[in-house]
Length: 302
Image 1 (cartoon, rainbow, N blue to C red):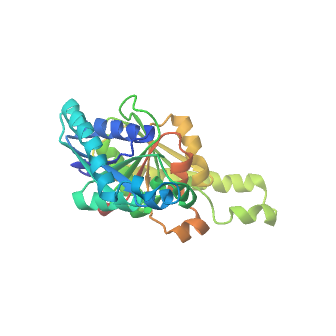
Image 2 (image 1 turned 30 degrees about the vertical axis):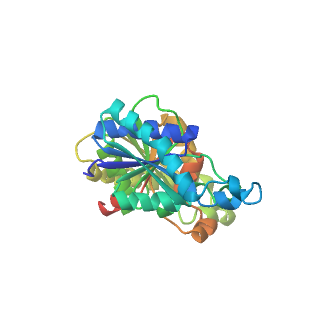
Image 3 (image 1 turned 90 degrees about the vertical axis):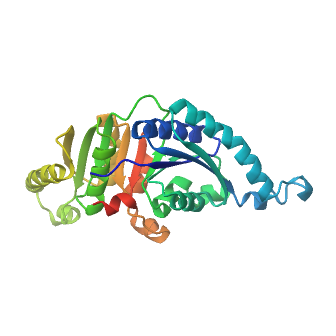
């Protein structure tokens, strides 16, 4: 059983995406009785981007910008706290968004970071990758990426798994944090010789037989995996299919009408992602619903 968060940090950038992140975070925190921290990052690159476009005398100093942003954010935190009956405070920092948010999580000991799928960002950030993607490497706690407006509590969860300790932690977290939801636990598999079979002239029917037998074994493994993870008997649906996991994420989301995907994040480096790819990053990009990337504190509970 993984305890629900006591502190939830929300990345606020005053965009529509950031508004959605704040709304979902407040809804979750209300159910958990958690504290909310609204954190806005002023991009340190802002002064570089504006250097050639404005007279220096017209530009606020970083300290002035930080003071103004906090003055705008503080009333928002007070209103949100009063409406939801929560302790809600505001913070502002200056830096690169992903690094600054990860540092803020560390500083306040948050157990969950909530961010919008995209927001106000520079051309430089668009080229190097979104803040949400960078946080899959940097955040010391799970990261919830919000893509949809808040309409209802999470009722349908998709939890892709590869049976690893990290994906076990992700499933345990989903079952512990969202006890009222139906969790669809899905696994996609490939056999070592799938790629060679066609060139070796192996009959399709023979290969289909191999796939059926492998799927049957994996369904037994899947049931044992789920029974081991859930703290009490609950609503879990299992699915085993043959194919590449990353290619199924979007399809599974549509098939089960998922509200959120809960998936382990391995925290690969930029170089590893470039050459090896990342199923968790594919989930952030492909899924039409919210995505909870589980790492950090949750992995320790595996």
